[in-house]
Length: 80
Image 1 (tube, helix red, strand yellow):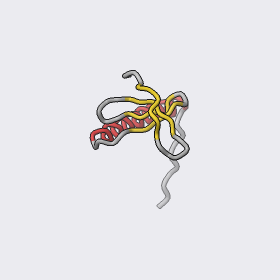
Image 2 (spheres, helix red, strand yellow; image 1 turned 60 degrees about the vertical axis):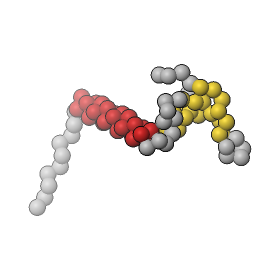
Image 3 (cartoon, rainbow, N blue to C red; image 1 turned 120 degrees about the vertical axis):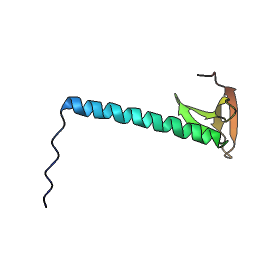
Image 4 (cartoon, helix red, strand yellow; image 1 turned 90 degrees about the vertical axis):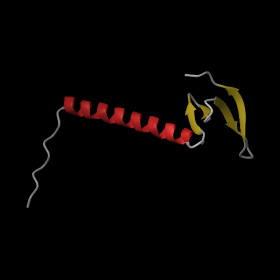
């Protein structure tokens, strides 16, 4: 049995699909971060080129990696 090809989406439909996908990814990331913090694990990310760590206790810290692999806390970030 031959499956007919899917019709092409209009540009508007493609934009709506892209917006929905972006929204779904945003929700998934928020849920993953919450799950990670609830498991008492810090979340590491980069913001404007600065390495950052969000700790389970709510602290957000800017840090740098030293040559020996340790982290050096530079300063506390303001709450969002």
